Length: 417
Picture 1 (cartoon, rainbow, N blue to C red):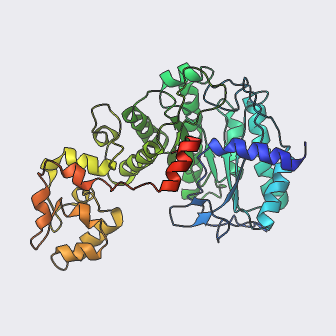
Picture 2: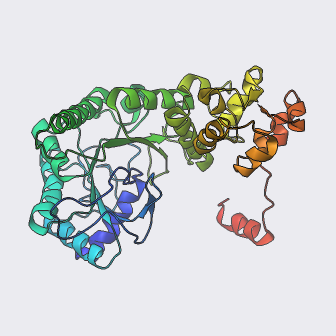
């Protein structure tokens, strides 16, 4: 099998992995002669500072000794198999970079032989790129649970980001669909990475010339919709990981049906809007001061799909409103639907000098159609009259789009919506 055929198989196998943002990497490594995390390329991922980056996202191999029922690469699957050598991955990365196709590498792998052997191979790719080719671009390595701490430490010295997949939201979910994997072992691996990050940071802070260890931090990914686990439990797990392991990101990946799947798995993917709502809820927890318990307001402990989580919370807690934009605290303002972190900070800055009126908020580009229902301004705001309206939820729902005739015809033929 030539490299092109391997690439077709192993790039396709990596598409289920969502943990590929390169946040936190701001500059190339000192002394590098090739590669940079700055600049523009073919863009597929966005960093928090707005940069677009493209990554070569592949698996080292899709052979795997585990039999996780939700995974297309499980040992019992009949999917085509391939395996790159370390030299092939290094060569592909360098050639893609020179052609300006990519700005970094995202490398994961099925587990072959054992955890230590697989981790050694992944680390060797990063080490070869850094040492032999002075590659300074972004590298994200998926680490293998149960690999020796010495191997994880070496991986962190060459990679910008490390991640360990939590796989499924709860221990019970893992027991059902991936009994060979244990949540406690996965979390222990995360703890080991966190301790090393803290240790190297502390050394550098005290003035020691310690090398950088995973400077872009660590992240994880969980599959949602493969089990009936509620959104509230999913968000609770995410909260535990953010607070306990200091993760940069938790990625949510909607379960995708696979051929010859286990009967316990659903036949269809969950609606993609559920994945979107989870990301919105995750954002509220990290930047807006919401807790996982208060975000989910529906009786079935799942997020509403027709409106965003912040608006759902506001409708369920109308006694909290109206919020006076000229007197409220930052924490109170962040709970107003339609107002983001940037607009709240600007409100706080402007009101030091004068009272804010409705027109001022419109100029700040808040989502006024929603915001006007929940805020009190220096002038009269007629939108407040709708706060107790019985059909307020219906008024604020996004307008439904009419499908085009030809779209409907295609849908009827293919079954896709």
